[in-house]
Image (cartoon, rainbow, N blue to C red):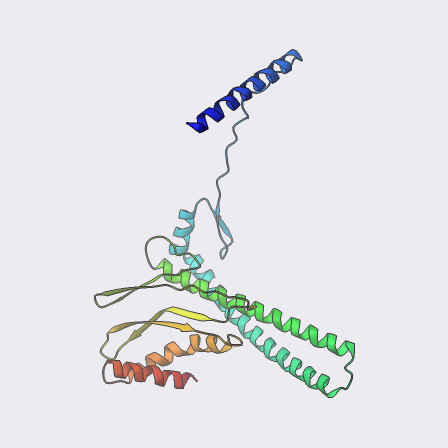
Length: 260
């Protein structure tokens, strides 16, 4: 009730001011427009960044991602390029780290290091940080593409990037797992995860596995584990006479030692 009492005089005053302004303009021979012309909003298109194509809606984009052989081939090609890029960056980071260590040794051996040598060492450190950043970006692209391929196999809405749900079925048991990561104050994301690890016991029983790897002072060790540990785990599990908690624990330990 109080709001009505306050707003009613303001509405009347506004209407009187509009009428007075209109009369003044009509006296000058001009007529004010009663309403602004209605403009039609343009439909927002959805792009496929991998295929470099535009689609009229998100539904068309999802159908393209699920059923297009061209999209699948382009995604696989992008993965190959990203893995090649990671290998190139890994070699470049190794070389830059070696040069930084050499510069540190030279500077420690000098009583009064020159300003040019210190600047050169700083430049090498900045280049190394840039290589680490690009390496992290390449790994994030690979992980995102892998999660997108897994999500296209399932029906329903696509998962968001921050939380990637995976549905697994083991016998009559249905599992839902998701992941979320926080980079913190680090230059690149050093942690890794794997939600689509599928194993098979010697009896043929399907097993669902999940990996969460915590990176320390870099992500090279985690990347090595992501690439090698799943295959080694399946190899060690296949040698066991049967599936039990004891044999599964042994297979995990043996796979870690083999990967190391």
